[in-house]
Length: 183
Image 1 (cartoon, rainbow, N blue to C red):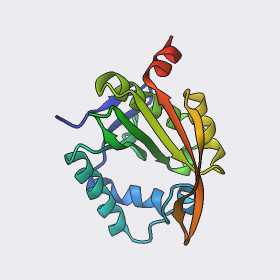
Image 2 (tube, rainbow, N blue to C red):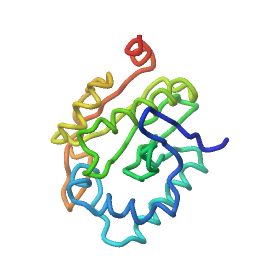
Image 3 (cartoon, helix red, strand yellow):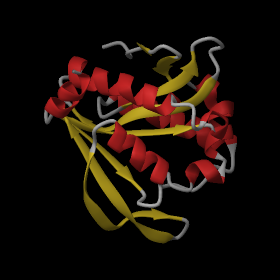
Image 4 (cartoon, rainbow, N blue to C red):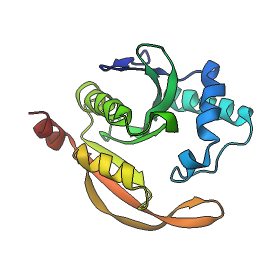
């Protein structure tokens, strides 16, 4: 199966590649991006290359996929979005994303999520989409609710970052709920 390319009104979502490492590093080395990401900020560009290689390995193992989020007009790389813990047989995955701060509050993440959810539910025929967030990540939590996700609960001490454990929210969206939202 070829890596899917998704297109929206303003965005192209395609496979993130090593040529994107400098820009990916620029995003993931920013504390304001990683504060609620579940990992520490990157300190070396080689770390970005290693993560991109891990995205490729996960894709090849059919356990997930990570798209570069690019502006359609300029092809500028502004973030990534992906399906994590993908299990097509069990019909489930989790969505995760990050965006360069220069592009926050412009609905790009909502637009990218909508495209990925459409793909997951229609092309992959998944039934459940999950998301794990920090309770303090109000913008992401609001976005998930706007997309139709339901807050299922709080996992105590679930995420470990910056030498301490943090609680996490667990959200889910089921295919029939997504289809209902489309009408």
